[in-house]
Each structure stands twice: as structure tokens, then as C-alpha cells.
Length: 523
Ligand code: 3UK
Image (cartoon, rainbow, N blue to C red; front, side, top):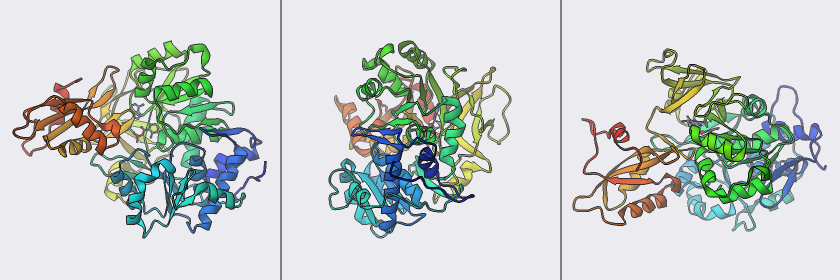
């Protein structure tokens, strides 16, 4: 081991030391932290890489509190940059790598990032935006073979010193942000603190998953999602376990291959993927994998999917609900107490309650709006005072979900309170899909709602009114689908399109989506 673990004086706290250096202090420096598509890295090596990156940022003049936007694929460079920044007190802001340019443009501006770290394959999408943000954006760092005229991460690491003196941060300092999509389009930066990462591991991953140093974990959800960040970085690093990181999209083939070759003990997925895997023929037989447990989040896991998976794979899936605001899961099933079709019970350390429209607790068994309280809630939404006030009510946070508690005390998901959809575990705003549809020359108006597919998972369905004189020609449906795919993150496209003469509206002209939902299940 070449690095000596760093420490901070009593009263100070830095999440990156807790997730990296503590493993060295506790004698796990030679254990594997990361297996990615290119190599294997011990805790000693990863800690050194993070130290080098922290030093490099300081050398580039990026200071404490400044934001570093991360548009990065999953590889060892992700934890290097994320934890290296946190060591330096610089605030990493990982964002979805599949975002269209307009969203990246918004995030570059909204965050006021002074530095950008980007994986080489994603640079072409960002390059045209950079100049507009130059006044504040000072450094661009590329992870990959060719820096294309920018700083190359590998060069920065090679030149920087391997030991780093951590920034004197405290538990309540801002550590990182994650963007959450809003129903009206503009994403909200959820500002998280130094203590939050480790708290999700202590409250959820250690007691509920029973994660330990012998585990090898693999998350289909990428590190830029709050779900993936906990799954593939915080949780394994909190105990010195090994994370398998994969840059490519989590197709059934790519996932099936990792299950056989890397033999993870814990696999974290989302319902859509469990469904795809089961029908893909890519899943290993019971004896050929090493799984002991799976988790599902992002959207509700239908009971049949959980049961079919257990039958086929011989391991359970723990469904649990989390959010970007709460950082990770706060209501979950337990290994010894699983009720498929429900989210389980509140995780110890969190409190959950159901309230009516007046904010009063609902009667037992009634549906109510879910509010949650716990130590990992973000401090506020960046630059969104009004949204922050609506969402964060003292200790309680409104999740925007409807829930009911069954007689036996299991929490049952009953849908979103707003018009937002959760598709493959990710938010889709119906407004956004509608706006994309109406930019097509054949479309006058559109309304998008959620409809169930064959696995009982929600997917977007569009009702469109055509321009006067246009008829529903053959090929129109496919044309509209690809039109949306080219404008938005592709998974948001409507799986079914129904041409209608008009949309149901209120007297004030608002689309009555509930009428379309009631009328139009499945396409
Ligand atoms: C929905 C669920 C039913 C629910 C997330 C685990 O999904 C995550 O965060 P997001 O901010 O979305 C939050 C919203 O997603 N949801 C999540 N999990 C479930 N609905 N059953 C579930 N098991 O509407 C919630 O309000 O994208 C999930 C860990 C961290 C996360 N950020």
C-alpha cells in the first residue's frame, strides 16, 4: 500500500474519508473496491486515485464549494472524481448521461459549475454547449484516451501527488447534489450534505441488505442516479465490499454476462429490467450465479414479477421506495419479511406518515399522501425557494406519492399524486412528451398518460389530435415515436399512440388526464 490514510480532527467530517481511507485504517487496503470494464482496483489504489484527483482540482484552481458537473459513464473514474472532489470540498454534481443537450445546458447554467468532468464518448454532445458557460466554467476534464484539447483525467492523475490533506469539512457541509426531474420540466438540484452518504449505508444497506466485506455488488441503475450511487458506491465502500461497474447500457445480455462472469452476490435492478431479464433467455441457471439477494426500486415491483424471479433464480427481490430527495430507500421489504406487491415497512431511522389534503393523518387503511422524515433528506433545492418550501415541511418531506397501509402493516403504493409517471424507474413528465409530440408537423395537440404493459408496468401512452386536414396514415405511429426519441431521452417515447378527434378538457382549457387514464388502459 502506498497511501497513508488521512484523518480529520475531532468535530470535522468528510464523507470520502469515511468511504475510502477508513477501509485502509481498518486493514482493507488490499481488498478489491472496484471491478470495471478495464481493470480491478483495490481500496488502496482507489484512495490514491481520489487523493490525486483532489490535488489536481486544487492545482486547476477549483475551490471548495464550487460545483463540478459530472457527465460520466460507470467506471473507476466515477468514484475517483466523485470522492476526490468531496475530499477537496468541491461539490460533485453527477447527471444522467443520456440527457438531451437542452437539459445538460440547463444544468451547466443552473449549477454554475466551474468544472466539468466528462467521459470521452459523451463529449461530442457537450462540446457545442461549453462556450456559452465559459464565464463560470473554467476547466473541462475528459475521462478517456483522447482529451480533444481539454485536460485528460489520466494525465492529471499521473502528475498529481498521491497524498492529500482533506478539506476541513463538517457533517452538515454541502457535499454533492443530484438533479431530480420536476413535473413542469426544469430539474431541481437536491443539495446533499456530507453525512448523508454514510447514513444511507448505516440505516438501509447494512441492516436490511446485511452487506459486508465479502459481498460483490452489481447495480443496473447507474451511479448518476441516487439509487445507483448508493448501490454501487456508498454501500460497498461503507463496508469494504467490491462494486462491479459497467459503462454500457444494462441490456439483458450485458447484465446476464456480469451475473455469470463477475458472480455478484447482490444485484440491484428496476422492475422493467427484471421483466426484460425474465423474458430474455439471458439469465443464468440457478446453479450458475452467486446471487444471495436482489433489490428493486424506482417504481413499484408487481407481485407476479417478484414471484417469477424467485422461482426462476432462487433469490428474492426486496422492493423498497426511495427518492433523490431522501437519497435512498426509506420504506422497504426485509429479507425475513417479504410481501410482494408492497413496499414493505418504514426503514428504522426513518418515519413515514400518510396525510389528507389538509395535512391531517388519514384514518387507518385509508389512502393518503406519503410524507417521510429522516436524516438523509437533502437540505433544499438549489435556487428553487418556492419548490423547496412546498416540499420540505420542517422535518417532513412530501414524496408526491399516494400510499395505503394494509391491515398487517405493509405500505402499499397507490400511484403518484401529480401527473408524473415513473417509467423504468425514472421520472417522465407528461408535459415534456406532449411538447415533443406537438413539434411534429402532423400533430395539433397531445396528451400523455401512463398505461400498463403486459408486465403491469407503467409506460407512456399518447392521445393525439391531428392537424386539420391530416389523416392517420400508415407509418404515422412509428414516425411520432421516433420523433419523440430524437428529442427526449429515448425511453420517454409513447409506447402506444391513439389518434382522437379531441382531448377532454376543463372549462379553463386544462387537459383532463384522469379521463384519459380511466378510458385508456393498455394500447
Ligand atoms: C417512485 C417508487 C413505488 C416514487 C430512488 C431508490 O426512484 C428513486 O428516486 P427518484 O427521485 O424517484 C422517487 C419516486 O419514485 N418510487 C421509487 N421507488 C419506488 N414507487 N415503489 C417503489 N419501490 O414515486 C418516488 O417518490 O427518481 C429509488 C433509491 C434512491 C432513489 N432516488
